[in-house]
Image 1 (tube, rainbow, N blue to C red):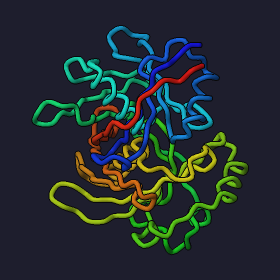
Image 2 (cartoon, helix red, strand yellow):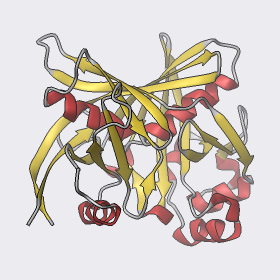
Image 3 (tube, helix red, strand yellow):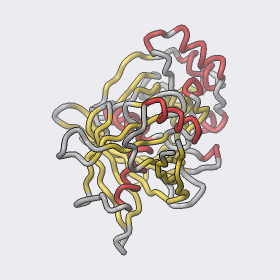
Image 4 (tube, rainbow, N blue to C red):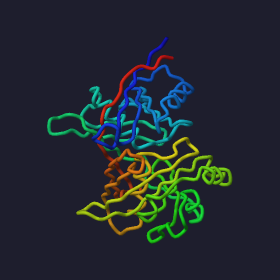
Length: 300
């Protein structure tokens, strides 16, 4: 009976039982697509990653990311956590790893404390900002269990945005963010009626808190019930898209963000995001700490 080693880590936190849990299979050679999907469903976390040798020998690894029901082209907390796990196992090289994911190549920069211990990582999203359809305010309010007046339109309307994975991003008031409660029926209705979404409708809500020094403090929540994640504790791919989107509505060359997520779930997470203008568009990064939790074997 083949055994596949796994570890779990809490990502975007320095406290156990905080942040977003992640399961990592550091050597997934031999696993089929169906087995990886079944393992992701068995762990029942927002994502599980599977590490393979890279197709390009100049890269570190090929990483496949599965949520409960499907594979993802790119995701933030799984990439941050996988970089942390591989670095702790001595695969950090010179401190920079290159991961092949379906959306492109992700650069992972390993972070250390003063004693040289690996504490987390920073990732660069694989694509520049893309934006797509705007969504009616009424749709966002209904899906989030809010009122129309709770949606803030000062900077942008609710809009589809991506730096590797697509999210509908909408600003709400601070009070509304705390009150938001996803309507599973409304989410399903949107997926049925909006066939261009291909069954994927992930809603990322955020609220401005304050500016402090050179950082903008935000609070965020992400709902994706159609993918099996009622709410996510920390969504790096959504927050990199958010950082890039906000920069696109400014005259700045770069911006820094501190984003709190998962508070309402009892799993507070802190994400450090940046966005900057580049030759091919607006690029974004996200960074955070990780904490090791579990290790074991899956028997297949």
